[in-house]
Amino acid sequence: MDDGGSRLIFGCMGLGGGWGSGPLEAAHVKAAHDAVDAALDAGIRDFDHADIYAHGKAEEAFGRVLSERPGLRGRIRLQTKCGIRLPSPERAGQYDSSREWILAQTEESLRRLGTGHVETLLIHRPDPLAHPGEIADAFLELRDAGKVGRLGVSNMSAEQMRWLQSALPEPLAANQLEMSLHRTGWLESGVLVNHPEAAEVGFPHGTVEYCQVTGVELQAWGALAQGRYSGASATAETGPDAAAAALVGELAESKGCAPEAVVLGWLLRHPAGIRPVVGTSNPARIRASRDAERVAAGMDRHEWYSLWVAARGRALP
Image (cartoon, rainbow, N blue to C red; front, side, top):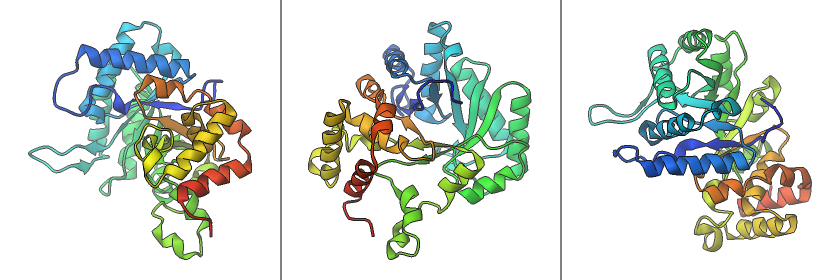
């Protein structure tokens, strides 16, 4: 999906006024407008949603933005996710990748967004009761109706992707995983092979490599690491992440950018073509991300490894 725009993706999970039970308010819509403006200013053209974000209010707020700004839909790409059923008084939370749930939730997302289609649909979490053929049938029905362009996944391992791919007539488009300077299991699952520290790594070994070989786009959720290295979190100055935050600050000063651009640039520097999802709804922090690709292009091997080692808090084995 390279059209000359930013490789960054804006994550819309913070829109809609939070996860409370109250209705969408005018202030929430205004905040969504401000976040979208900041993302566009940063060169971002891809917007990531999920049916569960703010209990649907994130999509609803974004849909209001689209309805109030004619022409915007044609300038951006949308993706949304389904497959999680939130808990209720009557039922425990669960994952649901049944054909009926995928079809129903995609229709709800399109209704809230006020659009006839999304470019990409992701299955949000692996469902132990899912059948790959059922997921494929739902996707093909949506694709043939012009409602969904591509199918991807989120939080799946290489083997789970291979299992699902066996029923699909076309390649999976993307896998969205937690990847950041703070969550580095995606690196350590490889470099700690045959080392005792490997027992501490939960990231499924080989998943990044599988995506590279098969052309599956890697998207990184949690890419800003909740601000712990860019001054938006108390731990950036006082907690165990202080040393890494200090190094991020030094590099930001030397490269003439904001700390957020360094944190994201570190991900972009990896050869897997990772696309970080910028999850903050703070317009200033969104705009601060705009230099991430420039930073990545100029980040040398020593800087990249220094950031990783600082975030680990110990040397590589």
